Image (cartoon, rainbow, N blue to C red):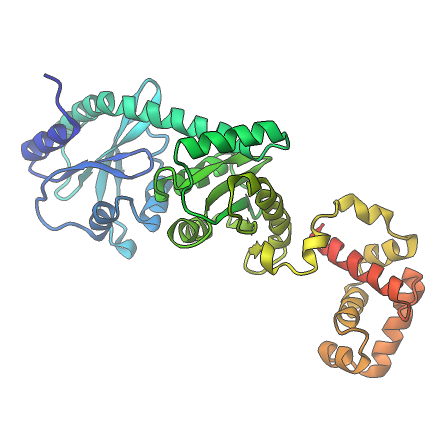
Length: 376
């Protein structure tokens, strides 16, 4: 009779006289034995929270467990409360399905490792059907997300209907998040971020995938699902995640609009100190972010010359002057500049840009050009 996962864990634990834990590929506990001795903080948090803490995930993945084909000895990380442990990967059909863990205190012997490898092989055969089903579900969800956010009304409506029938995304309103790396990232960056999101979000409470080079997630806009999306994305480092949030919508049919606005917010987030931006808080950037970058090429020659000169002092002066509605006193104070110096800079701006800063249309054009250049 084929043994179950819990039976494999318990039998190995009793034979070795040490605790045993099996995680899935996203470091969620699948089975764990009775405890011998004290638990370290990471193992306790994994069992109670049904997921390894983020600091532990980073430390463990940095040890190379994702690509290891044999056991990996991982030293203690006292700074995060993690004792030394041994990781034995669960591999079947050429895919990594999870990990078997032994605490390495006292050190695991070669004979014990052989027993652990045998148990891991047996466990992999049990885990594989569920892992295959999870892979199929992720692929199906990717297809649904792509269809739902499609510009084709029929395709989008069909995906919305299927999601409703399958009881996805029951919490309303919904919100769409779009995310991208702040700088260069490895080829596995998108997959890693998606794994983190899926590991933390309850089944069918979110829809995650990749679209147009961005990580995209749809979830309830209030409470637990939405909070988890933001917290998970902000926890990623090396590089950090830029986050754009679309507006909250009440029906799946409006998700495409929220996605478009999340992407617009993402453009603004790239220039925000926080690395994130929300559509409802964009102000004038709602309009500017919807303009193509190529719109800069359509500016009058003089204004393009000013933006291309690289004279940051003049550009900052123009932006401050416009942000303060042409008030010379407030602008000079904001720039810590004498009024005479400000007047000189404003004359230089008018000469270079070939604009009249007393003309309303010229001022509007300058303001939009500055905002668009910042988003470039």
